[in-house]
Image (cartoon, rainbow, N blue to C red; front, side, top):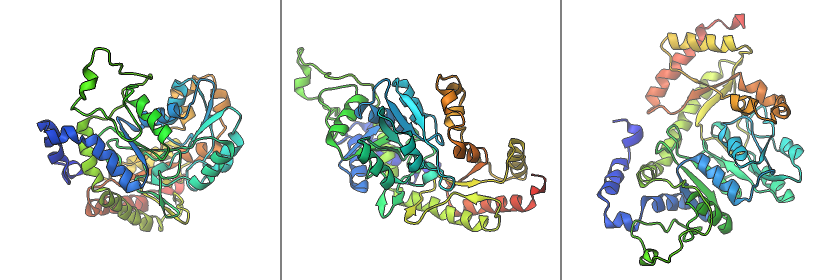
Length: 392
């Protein structure tokens, strides 16, 4: 079995779910997972959901975003953040990123604020925390909630604090490739009781018994629910609830979060040492007092042309090297976005993002062991030494 999924209590917890014991029904793994996040991140509320994207959507609803409102986010990310905004009928406004960190630039955020701005979604990309203090100040000054997308940043730290503890909302992903994974899932954190209640109710089908602290939808159904005149819903919502199977696996993984993040950080140190010998590659900048969690190890390559990027990729893989990743397309250059009515406004609006996206290479940090990582990084070093960069 793959140690990624079986190193901890995953199989034991899944067995307990399948047995459907009274203990599990009284104390569901969903509630245990939420409690574990609350204790680790020292926040008041955690809401487990079926994906990180569901968390972002629920947070936007809780913050009162309506059709015609504007939401500022990063174009150097996945589509989900902008996509949720558009699905809600609001307008996406993209603020450019910093060249060194690849994270949204607070100075550019300020330039994009209008009287219609109702939320800001910064993204901590590759595992590097965003500039949350500066963004919080902006949010406070203009009374705009901050929704952190920390999908890739478990245990990332900013000035001695864990990410996810300062914003109005913070989302962590439990998707298949993340530090902590149950294949699909997410957790939304907040310290605001009202926001927590709204997000949980929207993501839990609008049941009136839902509160800020936990689901109250245990398998043992209260007797008052069984009356013919009982009214279940007092608001509209979707079913974004995480399953007990996924919560059980996620909890088992989260019990080992320190170990899992440390392994990725140790692997990143090996990349740091290797890239000291290749000055034409620029590793992502990690500012002082920021602690990276290294979902991936990102560098800006010297390849200005697509064919050169692909040429090195093919050269390395054909030599037996492990594959690596390209950075996803600038969000507003995705096919679905180029057909949008606002594309003309978005295009060219974030030149830093457009410059670094095509050059970026994301190297794996999710190897199962240091030895496995060392073998692959040594092979990468050989490819870099042997590849002819002179023709670029």
